[in-house]
View 1 (tube, helix red, strand yellow):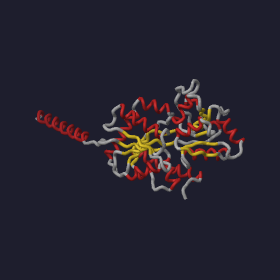
View 2 (spheres, rainbow, N blue to C red):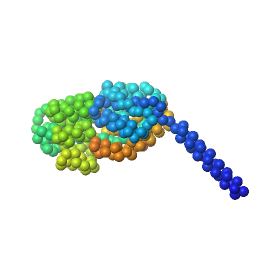
View 3 (cartoon, rainbow, N blue to C red):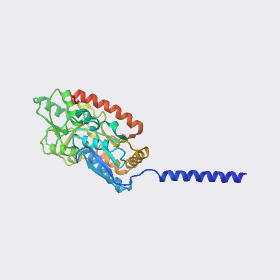
View 4 (cartoon, rainbow, N blue to C red):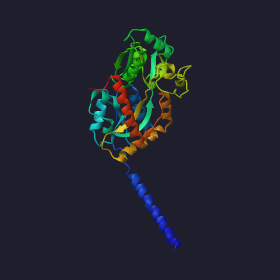
Length: 334
């Protein structure tokens, strides 16, 4: 009797193991190259992150198929979002998002909402920094604010990515705090924004850290403050004397403006749970890489990650936050 019971247990174990192997064998994975849509221009933060992911996935053999980055920046990113929305059921397409996920439909009335897509994962939150050219006399945020206040309206040129997007939202919040009007210069992408500041064609920017880090390292640009309630935690030196952690918060310098931007992944509508899980698992593997930690430090990202219901609820809250910010700035489409 004991022998029969033992045999029965062994048989059941083999059956369960075989079933598990069968499920694993039938788990979905891509069978052709994956198109990675960037709804923004080249050289910006979203583009840099997408191309970094493309490289580390290939280097570490995390996917059976290559990832191909495609920039679709037309209409403040609407081109990319509408393309993904229209490709229902295509699990070989993903899109990296920034705040234009919320701002573009609010500002333009384009028929798109984040709920039209399938949320996958939040990779991180991106900071914004107030930057000036290193040749300017503005050593601190207070120096910069005093100079802006001392000049007539629409004297200082603030460069940013696109119109009625996150960069201009921050600029409007800055204007309200100062009681002064700036000249906002919309540019194609974060890389171009940094280059224009290096060339002194604009007076300041509110670029992401990764978009201006190399120019800070070279001594061409100077960070004045970060638009967050806490200092950045990264202590590795970028210049001979300064690290990201040395950059004060804007609030501590008399500029009480805070703003964080999403870096997240979505898929088209109509994909299966198994297909979504594949990408959730893929990005978990990416975030576990030492290269990812180096990338996070270089770009001074806020390492907040989530998926599933937590991600869905966060998106809903931040859609409402952007609706309020856009309304305050007068950017809602009529």
